[in-house]
Length: 194
Image (cartoon, rainbow, N blue to C red):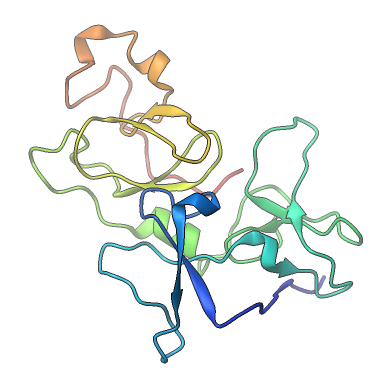
């Protein structure tokens, strides 16, 4: 199977809010190329991913759509509606027949597995990876200060950044609500599974 290619639409690229870099358009702003083939960014910005609607199939040039699975769950995989049954990673377009991107050079996989840990001792999420994928929609979020409970700005799912359980489940242990720990163990680094 041929790999999908990115459809070139303009010389500008999307720069997305660091808290949810695969977010809706309302979280993006356009910036012109810096002249060196990249975008203007700051040190804290996560990798830039283009809007998945600008991706097309190399076989038939159809626009790739979100993959559909029998369970009907949310996914970040893409699929050609015309010619392919194999889903592709939304981050690198690598074929993912089992629903997991295994491409080690994928920006999403490498970000989740190799990002730094939160090192601020006063942080409620001390020791957690700096980036986590929302357990519901798989959008990447950066969090290093403030409450351990975060809300994805894309799907509005509230969850604990430490254990990755929903806020409703994690807050059942009220003794741990303001604590630096949870009643559940800290979640390991995430694999990009959909």
